[in-house]
Image (cartoon, rainbow, N blue to C red):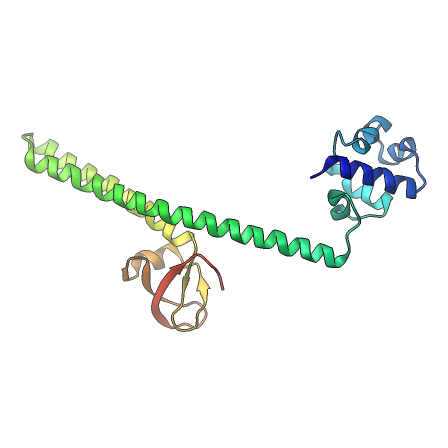
Length: 203
């Protein structure tokens, strides 16, 4: 946000409303020094009085934060731009999470296999051998569960029958037959079973 632009805009709208800084401050039950800070771009109006300020100046909060009166068309364009940016950010985040899933999966395999090799080839007491194998299995299993949670929540699964993209429940992913990230599941939209691929974009 451009504080200088917002400050200049507040000053312009105050003058249009034929108010002095002191009069505006009195209406908002604050000091004229606070109004001066806004208009010189040193501070933003507090959120608790922002709606009241906008009502007095006959502007919207969106106008205030943009530092200019925006038309409905401009507002829609700004909203679309912000929504697209959010979607893009989510897709990037999901890609990073799915890459992390591979790392966790590989580490989980190593955590399970290394103790088994150590137990098989090193001389040790039987109780220690069992403890090592069970410990490796438990830690590996926890890693697999975490990786599966990432796969379930990051991105979407796409139904091969109707093309619907959705986020299934954890149990649905856990119990589904699969190869890689493609799982045999029931689509919540069409109700048909199909091999559903993992995608990061929602249709």
